[in-house]
Every structure is written in structure tokens, then in C-alpha cells.
Amino acid sequence: MMRLGRCCAFAGLLVGVFLAWPAAAHPLAPSLLDVREREGGRVDVVWKMSLLQPRGSNLQPEFPSHCTPLSEPTAERGDSSVTFRWSEDCGARGIVGESLRVVGLERTRTDVLVHIELRDGRRLRRVISGADAAFEVSERQSRWQVAFDYGRLGVDHILSGLDHLTFVLGLMLLVRNRRALLFTLTAFTLGHSVTLTAAALGYVDFPTRLVEFAIAVSIFVLAVELSAGREGDATHRRPWGFAFVFGLLHGLGFAGALAEIGLPADEIPLALLTFNLGIEVGQIAFVAVVWGLLVVMGRRAEAAPAWLRALPVYAIGSLAAMWCIERAVAWLR
Image (cartoon, rainbow, N blue to C red; front, side, top):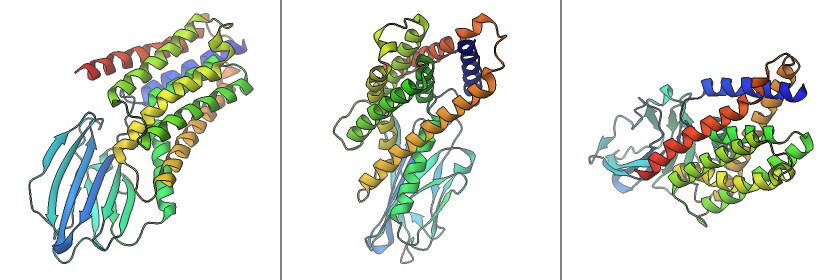
């Protein structure tokens, strides 16, 4: 009965998650606004926007009213993003003490990482979101602000990544013992931490769409293992090894998101560490919510029909199959 209760709880969780999240597995698609102030009031602008932006969004940087464009933006389309470049003339007044805004950000749930290099040598970095879509160019940014911004990005990314959370949910279905689950989730964390760090520092590099397709395949493989129910096989006996191997793959996906926004040149270790910690905080929060639902729902599921036992596994498999098809088509285009 306890196993049935677990299945009922997971089924309810999967249905709720599926309805709450949009179809894309990564609705979070941070943009990058890079601003470099030159002599004579010239400001060079790079606006990099992910192709994973929500439908209907039209984000546009807005400069102070005394700034005028010196050139029309030039567009460069990449594998997963589009980059616009142009220059502004902000005169002797410059941009210090002024505010830069991103119009339309308040209607989305994405973030924008702002990099500013001033002509006096100062470098400022902030993450802005819909709640506060403006950045005031004033004083130096502290290391604590860098840590907070990248930590928040890590939390946002894992909690908005339905594919990664679905894999974690599958691991919780695979492992019944709490102690074994702790080891399994730790192995998954170690795996994605290794490849996230290596990819972010440029030691490994794989095409983003290939990585996203492989992540979808990993979730489908996990669903197949769950549906087979072979509790004596190596996957069930050593789930931490299974989790570590696929954690390496998921780490490349995290690194792809981090590559979209970049790392501050003078604070790379701190930004990388806090981004990784943010991912872990979000993952722990998700696991805690799942266990909370188990406590609340598990005791009420004794009378549930038998078909609910298979529902969570087939829900995971169906989502994974859908992602495999979508990402294979996108990859082959």
C-alpha cells in the first residue's frame, strides 16, 4: 500500500507540474546586455537574446533620452541565440548616474544579465528581471551582488527546467530507500557539477541542440528502466552510478544556459560556484516539496485503483518521448 501511495502522490505531482509549466522544457532564457563606454561619449552595445524566449515577447534595451543611435543594429543568428550590435552617442553626459531599461521584461519571467564597462575602467554586472527591469549605473558592484545574482540564476534555471526536474523525479521513483536516494541524488549533483564546471571554463564543448536531445534521451531511458521493473539489475542495485553518468550529461545542459549569459571575467570562480550552488538549492527545494506531497497524499491513496501505479512512469516516458522528437527535429534543421 505504501508503494501505491507513492505512485498516487507522484501521479498528482506530475499532472500538476505538467499543467503549471509551459511546453518548453526551458522557459527560462536569460538575455545579455553588454554595454561598453568609449571616449567621446560613444557607447558600443551588444544585445544577445536566446531563441528560447517565450512566444510574443519583444524585449528591447532602452537607453537614456539624451543618447542617440549612431548606427542601425546588425543581427547575427547563432545556434541558439541572436545577437544585435550597434552604437549610441551619449555625449559628455555619458551613462553614469543614468538608468538602462529593458522594455517588455515586466511581461515575461526571464532575466537579463547586464554587463557594463565604463571609460574609467569600472565594470558593473547585475541581473534584472520583470520586477525590476531597470539598472542604475552608479557605484561599483560588490562581490556579494555577483554571488547573489548568479545564485539566483542557478535557482531559476533548475526550477524552470522541467526536463531536469522530471529526471530527478524519476530518480525518486527508482530509489525507495531514503538513504540510497540521498546517495543517488548526491551522485547526480557531482556528475552535473563536473561537466558544468568543465564546460563553463571551456575545457569541453558540445553543440547545444545535441546536448538537449541527449538529455531528453536520458529521461526516456530512465522511464524505460522504471517501466521494466527489474529490481535486481545493475540500475536498481547501483542507482548512484546511473545517476552520476547521466548527471554528467545534464551538467552540459546547465553549462549551455550559463554560456548564454556569460561569466564575469574578474569573478569567474565566484560566479561559477554560486550558480552551481543555486542549482543545488533549487533541486533540494524540489525534492523537499515532493516528499511533503508524499506525506500529505500518501496516507490517502490506499483506495486508489491499480492503474495509478503505472501512471507516473508513463507520464515521464511520454514527456521524454515528446522532447526527443521536438529536439531531434530542431537539431536536424
